[in-house]
Image (cartoon, rainbow, N blue to C red; front, top):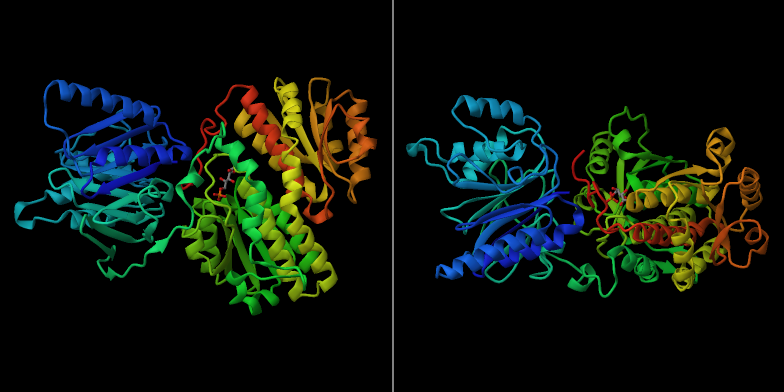
Length: 620
Ligand code: F6R
C-alpha cells in the first residue's frame, strides 16, 4: 500500500527520499513522487522511473550551470491508487491552492467530497481526483487564513484534521520553510527515525534502517513537529507527549536480496532460521514446557479461558485455522477463527472469559486492528501473534508473542506463515501445560518443534525436484488443492499462494468436500494438488485421490518421504520428512510455497510484486 518517506537534516534530501521509496517498493504501489523546497517530481510506474526523471533534470541543471541543489528537507510517497486512477496528476505529493503547503498522505479521507464542495464554494479548484489533495487545500486554507490570525503549520494541520473523518498518516511541509515537517497519524502507521541532527520519517521501518535503528513510533491521534534539531510530539488536542526511543533489532541485510533472484525465494529459504528464531529461548525441552514472557502477566486469565477467537486476514487467517486445531487438541479450549473483515461488523456474543487473538505479520492490517478494537470495547482480553515489533496491533493488544521472523519483504507471505504456525503451536503447548497436557506429551511436542528447522532444511535441499514438477504444470489454467484435518487449511493457503503470484486460478478445499461439489470440475486438464502425509486421515486422502484418478484428473501429492504406496498411483510427488501429525503443516506448506514460486517464475511474472496486491493492507 502507499508509503511515506520524509527527511529533515543537513544532508541532501533527494537521495535519502529516493532510497527510502525504493525500500518501500515491496509494499506495492503504482506511482511515486517527491517534493523539496526547489524540486517536485511525480511519475507513474516505479521508483526507477522517478529516479530517471530526476537524473535527467539534474543533468539539464548542470548544463545550465545552475548551482548544485542542496535541499536538506523533503517529503516523498509511493501511491497505491484508491481515489482516482494511477496517473501523474493523482500521484503524491499534493499541494494546496498556492502551492505552498505540500502533503503526502496514506489512508482515506472519508468525507472528502463534503470538504471538497465547501472548498470549491470558497474558490478552490482541484487538479486531481484524490481525497489527499482536498486535505492539502484544507490545511493550506487554515494556514493562510487572515494575516492577523497567522497560524503555524502545526496549528493549521490540527485544525484541518479536526474536520476530517477517516484514516491518515501524513507528512506536511511549507515549501518556504521546509526544514520543519509536521506529521500526524490516525489509523495509518508512521514512525520517526532519530539520527544525529536529522530525522527520517516513514510509514515503515525498512525506509529508515539504513540511516538509524532508533525509532519513535507515533500513536493514533498524535502529531509531531520535526526539525533537524528537535522532535516534539503532541496529542491532536495539543497535549505535549513524552516519547520513548525503540531500537530495531534487525539490520539492512534483512531487507536485501542477498544474491537470491527474488525476496520470496530468499524468505522461503530462510525457513529453518526463522523457526529457530521464533523458538529461541522459549522451549524447555527437559520439562516439555514453553515459556512465553509476553503472556505471563495474563496467565491466570488464560488458565480460565472459556473460548479463544482468532482474527486474521489471508495467509495469517489460514495460520489461525491451523492454530485452532492445535489449541483445541492440546489445550482443550474451543477456538473460533474468523476473517477479521467479518468479525468486526457483527454482534459479539462472548462472555468475559473469551480472549481475542490477532495473528498478523505486519501488525498494521486495518481489519485485524479494528477487530481488536471492537473486542476491547466489549471488555475482552486481546492478544497478538505479531511479527513487526512496535506495530500498532503489537502496541494495542493486552499481551502477545512476537514472531521474530525478521522483516518479510516478498508480498506473498511465506516465512511469516511458518513462524505463525510455530508460535501458535508453542501457545497451544503453553496453554495445554496449564490445563492438563501431560509432561510426556509436552516433551514429545517440544522435541519435535526443536527438530523442525532441520526437517524444513531437508525439504529445501530438494527444491530443484519441486521446480521440475512446478515447471511441468505451469501451463495449467486451473488447479485444485485438497487436504484434510491439519492440512485442510494448508490446502487453502497453497491455493492462495499460487493464485497470488502466478495468476493461475486455484481453489483450496478440505478433501472431504470433494464429493459435495468440486469433483464436478475434474478432467484431464485439471490437476489436483493433494496433501497426503502419513497421518490419521491418510486413508481418507488416498480414497479422495483415487476418486480423482478415476476421473482422469492428474494428481500431484505431497507425501511422507518413502511413501511408495501413493508414489506409484499419482503423477508427481513432493516429499516431506515424517513428523508429529499436529505439526505437519510446518513441513507440508514448504513444497507448496516453492511450487507456487516456481510456477510464477515459469509463467514469467515478478513474484515479488504481484499485480494489484499490497504488502500491508492498511485500508479497509
Ligand atoms: C498472502 C498475504 C496476505 C496477508 C494478509 C494479512 O500471501 O500475505 O494474505 O497474509 O494481508 O496480513 P498481515 O499478516 O500483515 O495482517
